Image 1 (cartoon, rainbow, N blue to C red):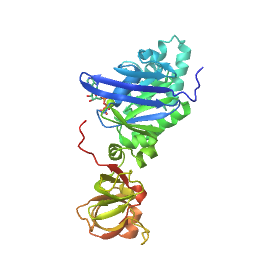
Image 2: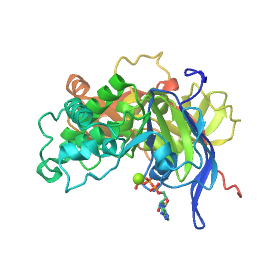
Image 3: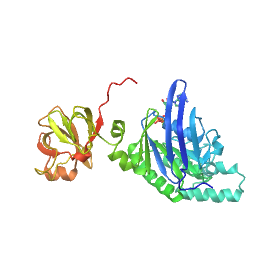
Image 4: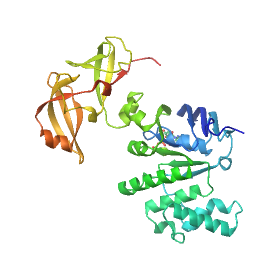
Length: 367
Ligand SMILES: Nc1ncnc2c1ncn2[C@@H]1O[C@H](COP(=O)(O)OP(=O)(O)OP(=O)(O)O)[C@@H](O)[C@H]1O
Ligand SMILES: [Mg+2]
């Protein structure tokens, strides 16, 4: 017997996939725990679907190994991999009723008609569509069709649920509701789930862990807070959330200079004085309140522009000593009102040293 806790449910080792001369996936290594909800996040074309299809066995990898539930399935056909899958477009059979769609995977498994009917009723209730079994897909909204697709994917109680951008075709409200429902359902069933998305907000809201991909490689794997607060690479920092990047230079231990502005940083990446770096900061980390003479990294800045974004405002600031530097800063509606911030103001602001991330500047390396 394998130890269910210690052994990852899914293990991918040194996986590569090429299409002709183009390398779509390069040396992918990943472990997914039983019951985990993992998101593959990355820009269009980075290889998310290719990796999902390799896991499902719909396309074979050129190199590497895939293990599901402790079994090597690297060369196993899809039918032997115990997964349910939902695609981005509602891939329902248009000529079958909702109930027949959901029953599709069960019919071939020699269940009795009564068993199948009971299971279909149960699944439709599970996805919030009781009494819709007799309808045809075309009579349902996009969100309802994806619920049916989800029910169909779950019909055989698979060990692994694979979702390829299941929400991307839906409008914003339905999307948020369905994402909460999918997450709640996944937790209740405990089914190990991988969801592909290019929507960072969706990944942050839903995932236990996020796998950030870029150009066929994994840039970082971490829980949403790690990915957001401690991005491992400039790519992750830029792709997840909003980030201001500034060219800077290390001037001493935990100290950098941007234009004429010298700043303390909590982590200088152990780079030597003189090293060119990229400094990254989140707009919401720019402080405007409770700044005293003791506050590190405080400076005067001009409020160049303010954009109203509903629940908060995003301002562009330029330090008075370094007006060519432009920094994004988010202010809550409360702060805007209490402090009376307007365009053209000169304000004292501060960067908490621990909120500044230092990346080695890209060098012109031959590779
Ligand atoms: N069958 C194929 N033949 C040739 N190239 C392919 C094939 N499938 C995918 N690719 C290429 O591999 C790369 C990764 O594609 P993939 O579909 O995995 O991207 P993705 O991350 O899912 O993007 P999206 O968010 O747009 O769905 C792309 O550059 C794509 O053009
Ligand atoms: Mg895709």
